[in-house]
Image (cartoon, rainbow, N blue to C red):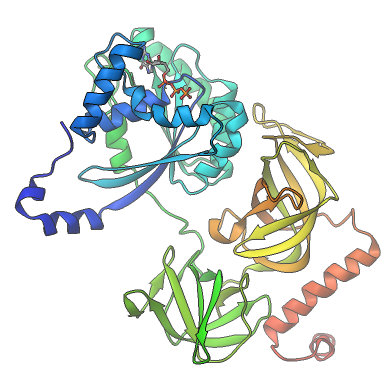
Length: 476
Ligand SMILES: Nc1nc2c(ncn2[C@@H]2O[C@H](COP(=O)(O)OP(=O)(O)OP(=O)(O)O)[C@@H](O)[C@H]2O)c(=O)[nH]1
């Protein structure tokens, strides 16, 4: 029953090579409690023949004991180990499952459905390319469906598969399916999701999950698995510029100084000129050092170490970019969407720690611009932000930070807020851009913020020159 490829027996190296070259799709499954997430994941693995014999035997045995279904085996039991851990309060918030078919490798971020777990869903979704939104055909679009879809769009996921589950309980009715589809689209059309597809399934009976169902002759859109295997993913390709947030400066001896990090966008080659932000200092790339030796080029997503021709001052939390590329914004004030994840509410004016693109900096939420109702998408004023609430806020940091809009680049546009007292992650944030509202600032604060921004810009365009001389250039 378990997954076999003919190549494994005949040409194991060929099999491994083929496996290595398959592309990877990361997806998240979202749904309300009992919509059938566990059953669906179990069904995907089972019907793709990805379950080992001994696992199957164990589930078959447990199914006799605990089964709530009339099926031979209860596929939800496959993922139950994790649920038990959750109930015990062990903090495995998001479970990542790995599987592969002949066409693709997959990572599923499996998140709990309860409202109180919205934060985990946001965490799991932040690295995903696609979301499966499960809807129980009997109940249609629920608050959680809207909430999850909104978070999915906020996190920049462009592909959504809406799996209308439990179709067996509504007699595989085309009319019911269309009703849910229209209800969902009425909401989702207000969101920024480019690609939405609908699949009528029964996770329990296996209809349209891996095998096409004879009970939905009116449906011609492909099984859930075939869509997962074929959806074309465009990843973070919107920013055509090089970004390397420096996570670590590696200095094993006086002769070597390497800047390590994961490339958030673009590519880089030895010999190209780079700029360090926020200082604006320039140098050229000497080498791209990796575990497999020096590389002629490095791309987004790769973890690398860069060495530079000159001894310029670059520290952890700085960003290396290529000169001539579109620059990120450098500022002490920015607007951002935040998903609040802490029991104690967000308070404007309170000092928090912010981690953005590898940089850690203190700051404050100056202003909650508006809170967003995830059901209606309506905006309302707010003094505080409670657990799971989402808002547009303005943030001031005590030092300048370099960032891009999250919609351009996830790696340099996302951040977390840390509660200084408890050290807990209090929020996930997505940068919109440099703060547009300076109304709440005092004159003194305005002058201080402007000075920092001008200083950083002057250093960027005229490195090494004094501020006075740059200002003289502008005014002459
Ligand atoms: N009739 C029918 N029942 C289903 C289907 N899919 C799931 N179920 C049943 O619905 C119940 C909930 O399924 P689960 O897979 O445990 O739901 P879940 O979404 O993982 O629930 P949580 O893990 O608590 O979030 C179980 O009794 C399943 O057998 C389906 O397609 N048809």
